[in-house]
View 1 (spheres, helix red, strand yellow):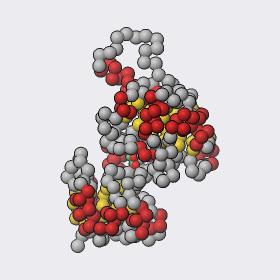
View 2: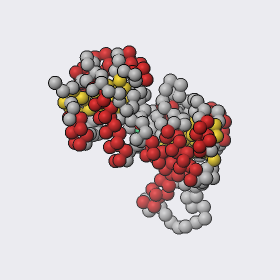
View 3: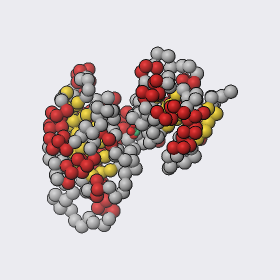
View 4: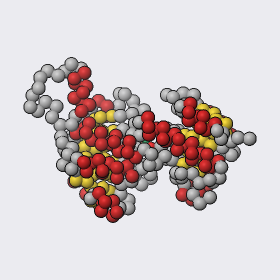
Length: 326
Ligand code: DGY
């Protein structure tokens, strides 16, 4: 009998057909609404594999009710929505989608730098609202991106791709990472800084670090106070890395010049959220990897990972190292 794969959000027909070549497939049929918890639990009980979204909470309860779950393939590079420890304890492989989304996510991070620095969103809105009255010397004047200092927090492959883009803009590039990356320093001419040094020296601080116990709430009031008043904060990683209240206060009190945010503590963010009322905030709906090409590659990678595990082969992208040698 074919194994059973449950997909927690409506995916394109061709992706489902790929899964159907080796499995029976069940799917939550909505593109907009996440799968309700009780249905997720019921499906997890009988599934051999789950193809999940970053918005699904795959916690100990899900793993404990599962009777034959072998693999969870998360449609994201981040996996902070999954209880890795419990999965590993139960011998369940967790897969993610690294590499295929690197350039697309770096493009978005750089776009946010341009958007906040050059006031692109504000300017475009103003034109559409019929508020463009005349040309004048400092009208909608923003801040340059070229020749400024970029501080990358989290120098993984997306950080490296962002640094390459910044090189084209003649930026000075600083980075902070848990482990220093000498090879990348030589290859790209980026300079290592402590976290404190980086936030103090940078004109654009870009958060790309994964959400872990260590990075949760890493950007606090004290950090924003250390940043230049002319600096911008960009977050394309996870909302919980930032103390949102502190960011709001820093923006309101002019501790920093603006923020470009693709991620939030609660997603979707409430449209009445005070952050969204600020002119110097550009907010996007968690679209870091959202190009058709990249999302398709991510979905295909999920299928390959699931197929590999169900056939006792090593998947392309495993998160829980302990199971890698199976
Ligand atoms: C991920 O894959 O973790 C990103 O947040 C998607 O944009």
